[in-house]
Image (cartoon, rainbow, N blue to C red; front, side):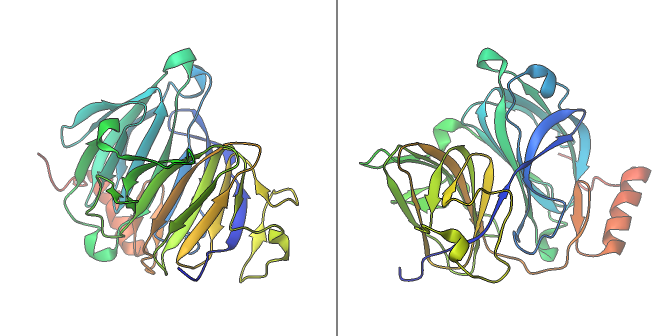
Length: 303
């Protein structure tokens, strides 16, 4: 490994409301997709009060994407037009490939102390796969290997590979990696990344130093932008760190611990036509999708 990744952009997640009235924070989404390609959206839906999330996400359609939900606490009850029903809880994940079309609902329930929390990531599907058969997978906490390093760094591996441990999701076209990393104070995390892949981290607890950049503001790179970040090398909670190209990354902590998602995938570099929960390649395809949803022909496959 001889080409370390450097910080390209740091941005704060922003409060927003989705579904029937769920308050959440959006790390990115519904904007320029070129920087995060093949990923479209990342939502942080942690909540302290049931009133902020209990109304959930009633029945709605998806086409052309995959939605990946990862839970920290509380539960989400889900169902879809293929007849799937289930509940995911703390440490569980759900990987749903909408493909040609699926209608589903996601209804959060509080856990201990009335809290609920997790993340939802949207990954784009390439044109050749947008109308594939839908697929729906629940991944339990027991299915997700956890790597415990000698210095106390802990890595949960939903997909990808760390120190020989391979995640349960292995057959996705964008070749993704999805890790949850917990770092005690005074530790260092180094991880190889495929050159050419999009890589970002979402820090949701504590503070961390990325890429050994003691003064990241002196680093000049194409489209470098630091948004809503104090002039400090330390990245705080609820911030997204988008990294430039390279074959590995380094993260460090000092006095504080840190927890973050580390996500990567192969860019598609295809045109994006996007409106709400449907993502296609052209405006004509998008128009057809909404016409089919209105006239009842949206669902192509039933169990």
